[in-house]
Length: 130
Image (cartoon, rainbow, N blue to C red; front, side, top):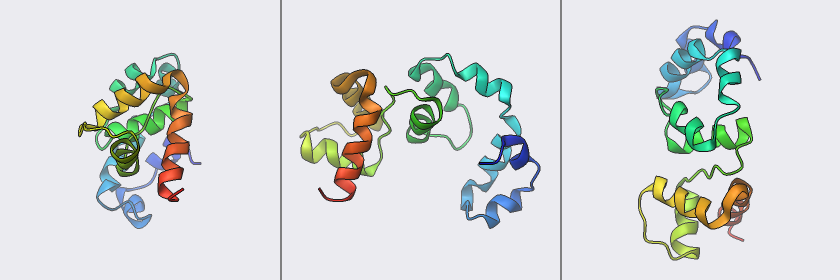
């Protein structure tokens, strides 16, 4: 995968041409802000603190921040919630919450420090209709 410096060397049109759509400006601007030193500073943060910092970047919402924390930084207590996990929560856990942050909290409280791994099984199980 290219470094942020390699991405930042391209004009915004590069991201548009790659199919980023309206996200092209977000990717372009953020690639200029991300440095190896910044990424290193994220490593020792808790999942909650890392998510809080990531949410400051334009275009990064809760699900993306949780995905970055889980897959990029190995924060296994991160639990990304998207449409599929909303369905899992409502249909399989009979949940009534609508706020994705609250649903994330529910699953992290339910499954603990390895909830991110469980998220993957729940996601694929629902997606593949298992």
